[in-house]
Length: 397
Image (cartoon, rainbow, N blue to C red; front, side, top):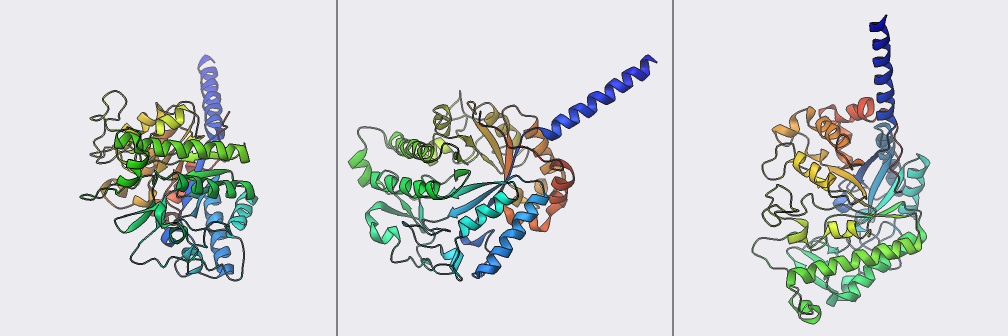
């Protein structure tokens, strides 16, 4: 009799624990990249009706897989997937920068409505400083800001960027974001990892003139970080003033600092570049100061990676959230790219690990197109197992 009571108690405990696990809040998002037509719209699809059909199909796929959030790139390269008073229509929407969609529609308004119809949230992904994707190939519209204010920009490699130290450029980017938040029901503004660009070997980012003008005695590195800090603080204040419910999130490169540069706070990684030392993005300061609502570090490596092991960085970020939400960026696009990502268990191990790490509140997958081929059966695994039960979004309270 006692054994039967114990067995029944154990069964009740398991069922209760499982129900709790399934109903816990969890951010389940997907990045939808529009730059170079990576995810949407498909290359060469410049027809309004076809674009709508394609986006609805994309949303339905992710809804079936259990997602509750979509992160769509609406400003890939100082251009717009919406009618903007500041920037031309995107070349990846209509085929020609500055040309409106035909027949005319507002893609952002359409995407938000369809996303909300499915009880999913819409995060508007904007690239802050990339201005010309390829200076050798891009035909820039006459109204593009690089033509109107060429003094705001720096050419580095084959791209053109806003000079982050230029105060007028910062004010312009802030105005662009304010416009979107004031006119559209976006649930969040989302920035990726491109602030100062990734370093190109043998090339120095040419910001000497601005440094001489605004350096104020700071070292070049500290001055660059202060430039990034100032726009994040300004954007945070602007977003909340326009709409207190609109979140502000950043998806940084997965390594904040390597342990050799910071023995106390750095992660036990030996990656070539890092946010703090190379991209001049002090993510931890932004979290501490409450300038951002969530962080989504891009941990696109596998367990046991030689330079940046997934498990090491996952635990590091879990200890450095400062009370803010943390969603792990998962590189599902890497499916079958090497032996580790050909292993069917790589994704399931990552999901289970992040679910068992304190202060981790969900995940975002890069990127949407990968799910179309169901690599290693991972879409099925989400739909039938890991995301089988719906999850509420984490509360910011």
